[in-house]
Image (cartoon, rainbow, N blue to C red; front, side):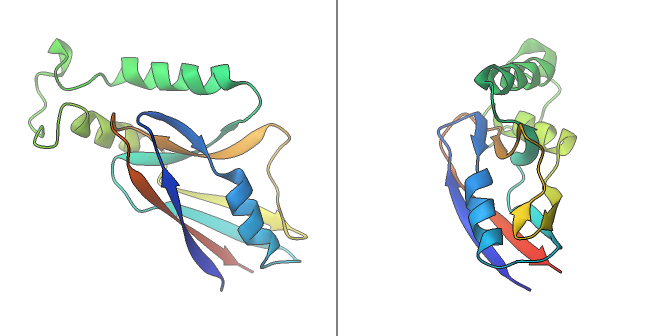
Length: 140
């Protein structure tokens, strides 16, 4: 079963598309049907399948999650005790808990079976740049 780890460098909170890297991996491995499992190896970021045409979607999602789970220094978050790594850390863990850390995407004829406007994204929940590792595993 083919497997690889890709590295995604983030610049802070936001959505980082990696559809092309996943498709390249799948195209180099499969010509039939299968399932691509995508798994992120971190607890303060997550994975999404989301629209890849209009960048406003990514901005609105980032804004929504920032309003849903503000930084620990926000008065409504004073209950947070895990602040050792900064005011964005525990909120990042909460956001990751509300979203996915693994995805399954069907593969047919060596192609990801994503819809026309769908893309694969790493959703970075931390304020500062990070190097994130995403595992791609293809099964028949």
